[in-house]
Image 1 (cartoon, rainbow, N blue to C red):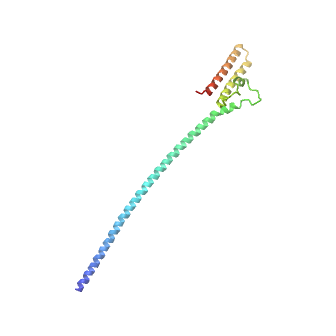
Image 2: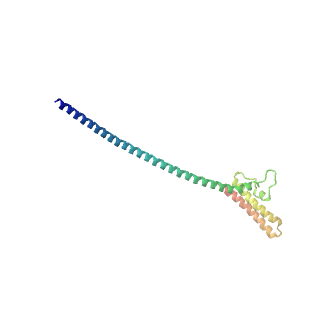
Image 3: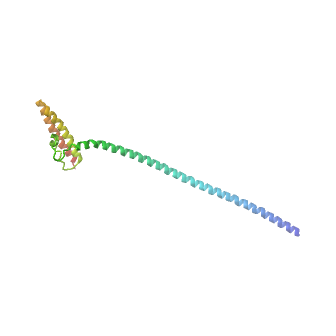
Length: 173
């Protein structure tokens, strides 16, 4: 009987050994599944982070491109304004300095009279003063009474046009 008991214990020990090995294999397999699930979740998280960062990068690229276009437009506008302002600077230099005698055209438009202080008024007055000076030069060398009469009327029309232009520039409703 002892032999049977010993044999039975051996069989039980070997069964429990194989059972524990089976359990170990099962645990390994389950852990492997858990690892696979964890790896799958990590991969999924990393993919979503990558997609998010990729989208943010695209958004920033679009913003940078839009800003570059806006900057280019602003530079073009500034260049255009500078080009338009160039004649104004040139004409402003023709305003007589204090103590210097103004030209006939400058006297006719009252070049130094600008109570509003607007640059546009000075610019307008300079344009008409130049036109009046040109007409006055023609009248000085003209020999025909008709030509002189036309010059006189043209000067008067320029003076009236200059006053109306200043009124339009300074008009407030």
